[in-house]
Amino acid sequence: MSSAIVLSAQGLVKKFGGIVATQNVDLQLTAGARHALIGPNGAGKTTLINLLTGVLPPTAGRIALEGQDISHLSPHERVRRGLVRTFQINQLFDSMTPLETLALVVSQHRGQGGRWWSRLGQDTQVNQRAEDLLTQFHLEDVMHQTTREMPYGKRRLLEIAIALACEPRVLLLDEPVAGVPAGEREELLATVAALPSDVSVLLIEHDMDLVFSFAQRMTVLVNGAVLTEGTPEQIANDPRVRDVYLGHAESQAVSHG
View (cartoon, rainbow, N blue to C red):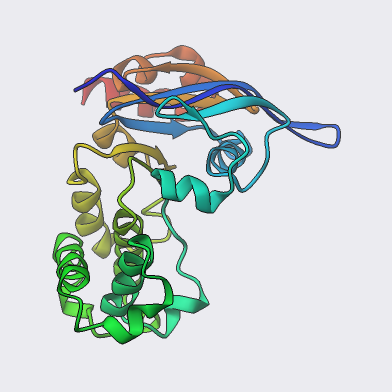
């Protein structure tokens, strides 16, 4: 795996009035990374992701994607450059099928805009890409169902498929298994594990089983600041992490499992 840095944050600060939500956060993602961002509730994970994706402007600091400063680009411009966050399914997609949704996203990403509806079934490249994504994310069995009718686990799979349709260089997976019933989790976890190796992934997740099975490197955020960073083994055996987040017994289980 290349050690080239594809996404970096330097000295990121975000203040809301007198509240400092992120404090001089540094983060580096290498090419092909499987990197997890963890921390207790209120640690500042969501704020950091919103800074990286352009939802929030930083109070101070710099964000670079493949060496280019993107600190002040809009979320849409960051997506176009290859920084993509898993989409939350909104009302726009609720009445659409996965096939229609993915055809729309692929068409828009290729600059065809709103013409997708007249091309559905006609543009073989768009169709092929949409069908490949349906297969990759195990959505063939629900491809003609409206999103609102689909099981929740399938909806989460569709979110990741939408993100992959944007051909990301960096993919931010925002709690992909949150709220997914136990019976639907295995398929989703396997799909996350099988994401393309050329896509660098930053995973934000509370599920420690997923974090430790997926991540090759981990950053721990506490009170808006980076507490430590390291391999899963280093994190599991760090007494500071054990104290603030993992719990002594769970850390020992991970380090010996």
